Amino acid sequence: MGNYIRFDWMIKRLLRNKNSFVVLEGFLSVLLERQIKITQILESESNQEDKDQKFNRVDLLVEDEKKEKILIEVQNDHELDFFQRMAFGASKIIADYMKIGEAYETLPKVFSINIVYFSLGQGKGYAYHGTTNFKNMYNPDDELKLTSVQKSKFGVDEVSGIFPEYYILRVNKFDDEVVTPLKQWISFLKTGEIPDAFTAQGLEEARNVLRVDSLSKEDRLIYKRYLEGLSLAMSLDDSSRYEGYYDGIQIGRAEGRAEGRAEGIAEGAKQQSIDMARIMKADNEPLEKIIRYTGLTKEDIEKL
Image (tube, rainbow, N blue to C red):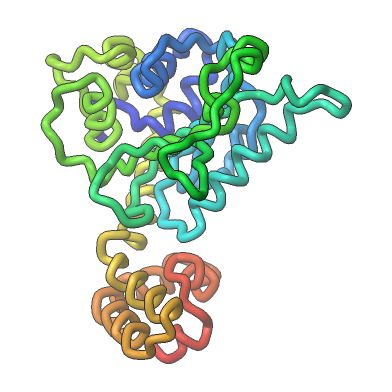
């Protein structure tokens, strides 16, 4: 099982304890590059404990001293519409925490932090940050900025400080020299190990809080079952194998190229015949699961 507890299970169970906030505060402080002090855990879509809760997704919504809302999501399964889900999640927080009749200046600042264990989108990196800015359509060097009065009233220096900000850590893509605090954290997220040389904020506390051997006997059994379920899911949804499959089908559909689609289906059938069989065996609703994993239609699957 490794020496340390996985981050997704950690935020699902252990970090509901205020004594463990220091670990999450360390991670957030390193990522956001400022000191974060968590004041409370808020209700989000799936932060309720449930014995039937799925292992593929975990989210946690917290509030800091500045009343900013920070949503942390961990996703293990491949999800084609994950970008849309990110947008929905941030928007829903804004809607939920804006009271009717309140002035728009009370709009909560939202940070959406997404830790994914699959190949989300196309890119060479493993850490991305997205903000909202406004460029002059006829002069790209001109950017719409806040007035001095707005800066003073809203407490931010840039327009982007008002809108949600998004962070994406594509953990499986990390293969870099570990030389910065953030890279230490991403390395931990990927490997589950904290070498003695790691000194990033929060990791020292994690060495104590997140040790598997510190769990109670009951929690250790629950954690073991969690890992077994996660291992099965990830073996069925090895996104690196599916990438050519997805790309061929999506490009073919988007560009109307039958050969691109056919090539994608052929490559998928070649690479995934074993996994398809596993899904059929492992799931009570295999057809629906295959459609969700691959983006194929029922007709595509029947052809395979």
